[in-house]
Length: 403
Ligand SMILES: NC(=O)c1ccc[n+]([C@@H]2O[C@H](COP(=O)([O-])OP(=O)(O)OC[C@H]3O[C@@H](n4cnc5c(N)ncnc54)[C@H](O)[C@@H]3O)[C@@H](O)[C@H]2O)c1
Ligand SMILES: [Zn+2]
Ligand SMILES: [Zn+2]
Image 1 (tube, rainbow, N blue to C red):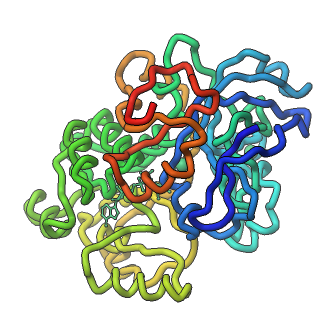
Image 2 (image 1 turned 120 degrees about the vertical axis):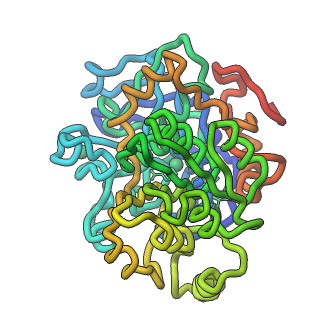
C-alpha cells in the first residue's frame, strides 16, 4: 500500500510499504478514506520530538471503512462499519480507561519501559507518533491496523461527509477539551494563543461553552480572519504586544482563562526570552521554546486557569513559576482523552451546532502529502488544514486548491 513515511527531519516520502495485517485478536484493519496532517506531525517533521525511527508511517487523524476484524473485536465492529480512528489507542479496561483518562491508558503503549524512563510513567499508545508512544504505524496511508479496535474507534453515520467527521479523531475533541478544562463561566474572558486548527476548534468550543469573550492571538492574517469569523477578538503579536493588549482589553486585570494552542515551537518577535530559547535549542540544551507558556503565566488573572493542549516534549527553561504560584493559578494539560468527548461532539455535529470542516483549506491526494507538510509548516498558500484522500475519492465533498 501507499503511505507517508518518515526518513528524518523534513524527509517524508510517499512510498509503498507492506499492507497491515491483523496481529492480535482485538485488531481491525481500516481502509482509510480521509486523513489529515496535524500540528503535532510538524514537531516530527521538524525533528523536535524524540523517538522517531527511519521508516515510521506518519499520521494520527484518519477515518474510513472497516475491512477486517480480529476474532476478539467482532462483537463491537463488523466489516463495512464506518469509523473515525481516535489518535489515542485505548484498551478500555485499565484503571485510567475506566476513569475516562484515555490518553494515559496503562496498557496500549507497547514501549512502556522506554516511556517510563523518559516521562516517569508511560502514557497511551498513539498512532504514528514516535516509539515513546508505542511506535504504531499511522493513518496517512491506504490502510491502518487499529489495535484494541473493539474500543479504539468512533462509529459514525454514513449520512455525513468525511470532512465533517474526520476531526473527531483529534483536533475537535482537543479544542473542546482545552475549553472544558478552563471551566468556563459566563463572565470569563478566554485568551487563546495560536489560531492553527487546534486554536480554531478551541475558539468555537469556548464560545459554545458560554465564554463572555474570546481573544485569539496569532500572526498569520488568514488564521486571524478565521478566528474573527468564529467570534473572537484578535491580536496580531507581530503588530502589537500580546501582554499589553490583553491587559488593555481586560481593564488591566488579565484574562481569567488562557489556552496554549501553540506548544513547543512558539515564535516570538525578538524578545529576550525567545532569543535565549532559539540559541539553547540550536545547540540542543533546551528541547522546547516555551514563550507562550511564560506569557500566559505572566498575563493570566490571579486565581485563573491555564489550559495547555499545545504539545511539549522535554525540558523547559526560565519558567516564571513564582508568578504561577503566587497568583494561585491552576494548570490543566494533556493529550486529548478523545473518546471521552466524541459521543457528545458527534451529536453536536449531527444537530448542526458545530461543523468542523470550516478549517479545511486544502484537499489533496496522499502523493501530495510530502509537499503539503512543507506548505502547512510554512503557512503558505493560506494553508490552515490539509486533508488527504488515499483512495482519491473519500466520501466527502472535495474543496480547496488542489482537489
Ligand atoms: N493535546 C493534544 O492532544 C493535541 C492534539 C492536537 C494538536 N496538539 C498540539 O496543539 C498545537 C497546535 O496544533 P495546530 O494543529 O493548531 O498547529 P499549527 O502549527 O498549525 O498552529 C500553531 C499556531 O500557533 C501560532 N503561533 C506561533 N507562535 C505564537 C505565539 N507566540 N503567539 C500566538 N500564536 C503563535 C502559529 O502561527 C500557528 O498558527 C501543537 O503543539 C500540536 O502539537 C495537541
Ligand atoms: Zn494531532
Ligand atoms: Zn486502558
